[in-house]
Length: 406
Image 1 (tube, helix red, strand yellow):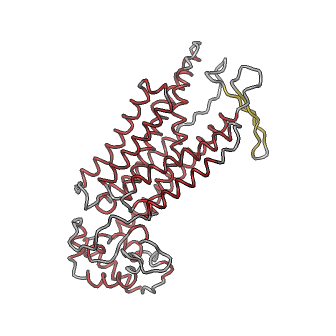
Image 2 (image 1 turned 30 degrees about the vertical axis):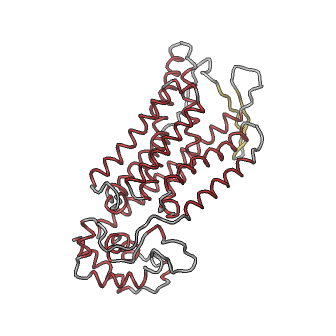
């Protein structure tokens, strides 16, 4: 029991770190894209463009040099640790939630992969393979055709979305697609953008004229990162909304989310470049989002309740525990009216987070969630609407402790 509480707190701490570093990375990325697009390039001088800005009671005069300034500045700030820290904390969070908790969150027991080691191997390998494919595409002659390259990248993301949904749970599939995309973005910074900038700085220090191709390559990867950011945020938040992932069309919903990311960023990029307000992009965004809602409301591919559904080893032990039926009665009395295949609670269209607690197999499979939400803490039922008593919460804790051997 203590171990799952400690793991839950560890997950919370790593998630907090991940959010903090992601805010820093996304904030700096958006700022520099907006700055670059909004530079005044009509001012005479050696700089490629410059801009005056005001913030926090102070004025800032910013100049951009396309290749490098005539002399290397004494102090140079590198923006890289935000990206690295975001990816590392995200990878740690994935390991804690989806690898340590593979039997609960990663494996789809109606799917083709039911081995924990195999599922984890697919999870890790897919991230690396995605970067390799993307990088090879960028380094091919297609690198000089940015529109074609973006279309191929979209096709790759759509293929991965479909593939993940064939192997993992719906929640894990969309989360992995977000991690897949974020890996490409962070690898762009680590393997391309920063090394290219270091080459330029090295040439400048050595008195050589830097080759502008390095800046061009870095700019292409930075642009890709700019358009991929918003979809990644959506995918990282999707695990809280089963209408996004608990449907047979989740892979297609993810593809439409990437298109929304393009339309939204195109509006802001054009605005920052002083190209006007492209309001039609918002109309298109609303239309795409309406299509997503329509897909989420389509009939789900879930089967009828089945007591014989394949379960994890721990779930089988919990199902066989002496006090299981006592705990099962508590869950039926306080939880199943919301966590049902046909929800009976007013205002709920679907079971919260896609968690079903109707059959004995449902309860055994979700034992850890139950004990954390309603046994150890009082998070569920919300506001204790069904008046779960302390002795009933104790029943849940005791059942989990004896059934899992903790």
